[in-house]
Each structure stands twice: as C-alpha cells, then as structure tokens.
Length: 441
Ligand code: URA
Image (cartoon, rainbow, N blue to C red; front, side, top):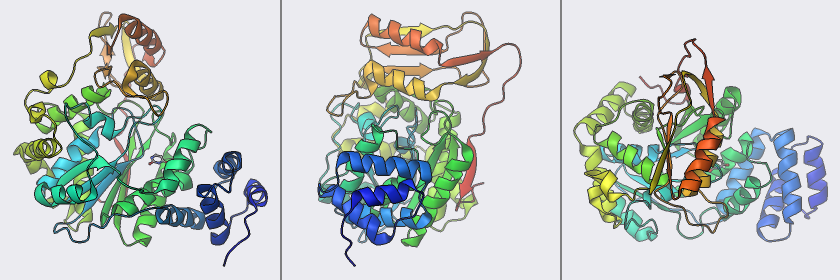
C-alpha cells in the first residue's frame, strides 16, 4: 500500500503521541533518504519521537527500513559460526580489539564492520589506524577471505551499508536526538543485520559516559535489541555494562591500542580485561556452547597467547606493523608533551565520564568536524578509578598532548571532571548490571 507523503501530518501525529503505521514510517524514512523530506522536518519528527517514545512495532519497522536502504553482507558460506559484537558507545571502550581475537582463537569467525569516533565516544577504526600502516578499507572479498583464513577482520563498512543510518545518525548527533531506545536499537540492529553474522552480542553502555544514562532505560534498550535480532533469526544477547568511568585506563586512539595489547599479552588486569572476557564468553555462549565451557575456552585463549597471535595475524593481514604486539609503546607514536593532574588528597567518588571523552576529543583524539583527521598519539591515561584513595601528591590523570598549551587546557578541564570525597570509602560500581539472553558464569 503506498501512502501519499505528508510530513507535517506525520510529525504532528508523533508530537501528539500516536504510533505511526508501517506504511507511514516507511514513507517518511524513504522520503528522507530520497530528499523529499527536509532536514528540519526529520529533526522535528525525531525530537517528537524522543520525547513521546516509539512503540516496539515502530522500532522493528525502522530497523527493517534501515536495512532495506542499502547493501547487505552475505557470510553464509563461511565455515565457522559467524559472530559480531557491538557497543552502544563509551569512553576508553576498546573491547573489540580484545574480544574479536579471543573469539577467533575459540573457533568463531568475526567479520566486524566498525565505525569512527562520534561525539565524546571513540571509534574502533580510528584506534586501529593508530597502528602504522593498518588498513581498514578492505574490499568485501578481501574481508571475506581474511575471515575464512584467520578468523577475524575489523574493517570499515564498504559500499552502501545502511545509508539511512549514516544520514540519520549525523542528524541526531547535532539535534539532541540520540537517546531514544527505538532509534538506537534501529541504528545498531540494522547494522548488525546487514553485517550478516548469525550470532550478535551487544554491549549496552549505561552511565554518565553513555548515551543511556539510567539503568532501566539501558535494560529496555538491551531487551529491544535482543527482540529485534531474534525476530530476524539471529542468536542475540546483550550485557548492560557500567560506563560511569572510563572502561580502560586509556582514552585516546594509540593509548587504547597499547592497553588492549597489554590485555592480550597477559600484562594487564582489571575491569577492562574482565569485561572483554565476559563479552567474549557471552558471544561464544550464543553459538550453543554452555556458559561454563565458553568461559573456560575464552580464558584458555587468553592465557595460551592464542588470542594475541590472532591479533598479530589480523594486523599483518591488514598491512599494519605486527611488532605492535611485542613493543606497543615503541611502534605507536608517542605524544610530545605529557602533563599530570594531581588533584590533592581524597577518595575518587566519581568521574564526569562524558566530559573526559570530550577533553580527549578536544586534544585531537576525536573530531570537531566530520572531515577532520584524528591524532593517534594524544589522549588521557586515567589512573584513579572510582574508589581510589589519593594522597596529596598522587597522579590522577596523565594528559598526552601535542603542545603544552593543549596539555594545560586539558589539565584545567579535568579538575572539574573528578569528584573527590573526604575520608569515606566509595564502592566500585558493578561492571555488569544486567544480562539479557546470555547466562554468564
Ligand atoms: N551506536 C549506534 O550505532 N547507533 C546509535 O544510535 C547509538 C550508538
């Protein structure tokens, strides 16, 4: 049934809290992609939807229209179980660099199409490009062959994958319309469905560094994503995880690669490593392995060095310098200036995690305009997670900057990102807040 496109009427219906029919939504979204719906009309519609909400049916329809807007990847002739993971976006969230090699070492095949940094959040492609020579622009056939040969590839989406999401995401980013479960679910799940993997694990971030700041909303988003994935025949699960402080201690492209290598080579423990293990075993569970078996295989893949070797194989296959696995801090470019924030004595009660991401981006780790290049060397090392007791002269953050001016600016900004309590103990926030569709151990 074709519907005559009447954007003002559809905007008004959403403003008044009505659900749009499948045909109405399809007409509006397709019309936007075709240039028949103006940017201001789509902006108004999105804001009405963010404030009034969308139904589950609307989220499912949006996902389908997104997928149908472009190409899809066919992984059906790969021999292993195909697995994908996706984070809704965080700060110091470098899990893909560890999780993909872990899964490949466990016999899964990971053809991961990743994105670039957005707003205060980092992007996997920008991080990988900090490795000298590393290429993310693989053709579909090269990606496919690499995954069949070594079990993993992390690359930019080639061709015309979900063009509607690209357009809408850029618009949402500048109109305050990112935080809607239905819009995020359609954005994330359309890319996962188009990416072709049969098993999909989502890491839904929650906290002041995430797009979803409160737990009930994050859990709703996780359930919605899982429902959409399952309705399309994909084994889908989600973890809802804490993003009230940077996940790894590093925020910034090369710094994050170095930390991921540290985890892969068994030289770093803590929350970042714990979450990587949890995500990898959750994803493996979706392929039909028991939770306990998944956990033990993933731990073995890390301890044996197999995962580190898979990472090395990927770097080699994508033309990066494989010595990054042996000597990350020599191979990755270092920033010329390092300054340290010493905030004085107290117990770290909290971080303004979004602002930390913005400060790292301001140093050059992220973009101001979408055509900007990112600086691989700059960023933050956040040494004091929530609950840390700092003495008067202790360092809380090392700022890695291009210039002393940049470093001084960042140190000044960081003072107001850190909340210190006097005397009392502050509990560490739980890392995994909820599991949907995966048991865990
Ligand atoms: N990540 C996405 O891919 N899309 C969103 O809408 C939010 C986070």
